[in-house]
Image 1 (cartoon, rainbow, N blue to C red):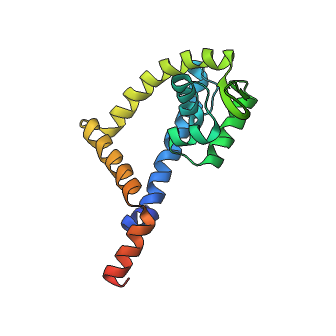
Image 2: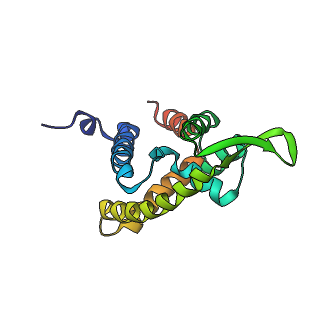
Image 3: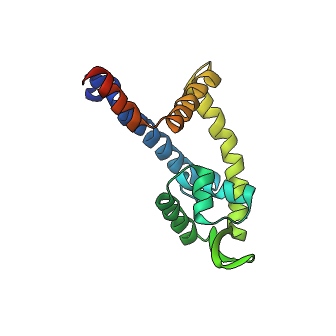
Length: 163
C-alpha cells in the first residue's frame, strides 16, 4: 500500500520529519530504562546543558537548546518531578531563579553519557554509509531556517510564483 503522506510530496516535509522524530524518540524512550536512564528522551539535552554550563535560568537554557521557553518549562517540570533538577535562587541575584542538577541528576548523567555512545552508533547506522554527509545536510537545513525562517520562504515563493 502506498503511503498517503509520501504521495503528497515536499509540501509534507514537516510531517515526514515529525514521523521520524517521533519514531526515534519512542525507540529511545523504550530503550533508555534498560540502560538505567530514567529521564525522558526529549529532556536529555537539558541535563547535558546544565552539566556543561552550570546553573541556568529558563531563558538561558532555552537559548542554549534553541527551543521555546514554554517547551523548556515543560521539560524542567518533568525533570523536577523525577528529582533530577531543582530550582534555586541565583546567588548573584536573589530575584532570579536558576535550574541546577541534583545529586540524582548527576548520577543520571553517567548512564546518559554511556547510552549516548550507543545512540550515536545506531543513529550513524540509520543514516547510512555516508552518515556524516547526511547529518551535515540536516544541519544545513536547520542553519538555513535560522537565517531565513520558513514563513519568509513561503511568502517569497508565493510572491515569485503567484501560488
